[in-house]
Image (cartoon, rainbow, N blue to C red; front, side, top):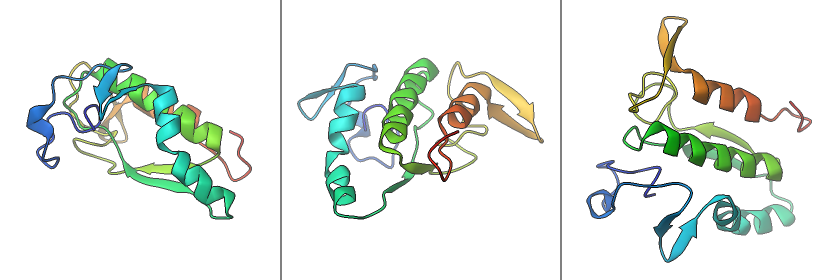
Length: 136
């Protein structure tokens, strides 16, 4: 939350959290990095072990963290999803949590099909995608 929802008014605690760093942000008595993200999703691994299919939906990173911080967080998050073989979808396509015209400071946007797309995030999404067989 201190990375993905930094300064987002929809998160009640947004005003009580300092500017994020990632990896290394401390929240809920844990230092967050790829390993902590993996541990965070362990309950869903337990559900999966009982035969359920897991698909992560409605996640994203608000446009207030610096882009390099958001990209490190996305990279680790996608690598965890990929390791577990889970599909995922971001909250929104366009807007402050999306990939199109999110407005995150220091992101490089590229015109694509009449939109301004965050090229680095698009490339990360493409390179991290899962197919039905679990291979790209």
